[in-house]
Amino acid sequence: MENRKRGGKRPGAGRPIGALSKQTLERNAVKAALEQRILQKADELHNAQYALAVGSLCIFRVEQDGKKKKHILVTDTDEIKEVLDTNEGTSGKVGESYYIVSTQQPDNKAIDSMLDRVFGKAPQTIEINHNETVDKILPIIRACFAYLETEGSIEDKKRELIRMLLGDKGVDIDKIAAELGVVDGELIEMKLLN
Image 1 (tube, one colour):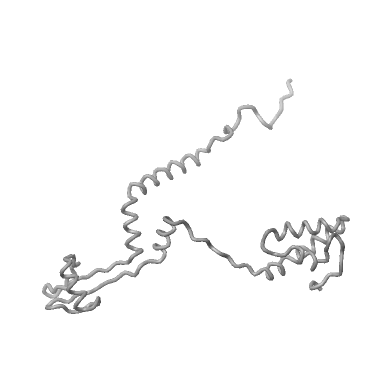
Image 2 (cartoon, one colour):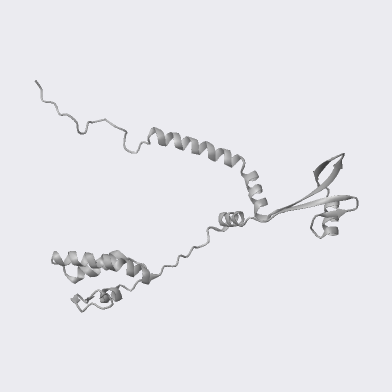
């Protein structure tokens, strides 16, 4: 009887390196089809977003048809001008007809989106209260220091630990090191911590 290996790596088994899974290929095909549909309607989508960004004004003429009222969208520029001039942009009666003026306010999100597409996203600033950050992280640093001391580490490792934990967040690492009792590799009395 031949002693055969069971399990482990087998030559030629599995998906080749760099090959995409069936699920990924399907997802990419759907994404490409959706992108094509959107590209075909790009002008219409832009116009719709532009209309949202600038807002719109519609004027309806109310006509009585027996007991029913009909609201007819006014498209004649002279009639629109007369309604706006007579009623100063609000609903009301002009001559024998009653007009309803409907406005849609500009959408700030649509404005931002269009400006971001043209000029790029505006820089975002995030304010961080460094004192709160330091207050939250000091107990973690203390615990790490306690561990380092049990292993017989030196203060230079403590300074490196401070640098790793606080990173480049605008915190004065030397000040924190001093507060934790690490200055120029020597241990000093700890202040502000007790």
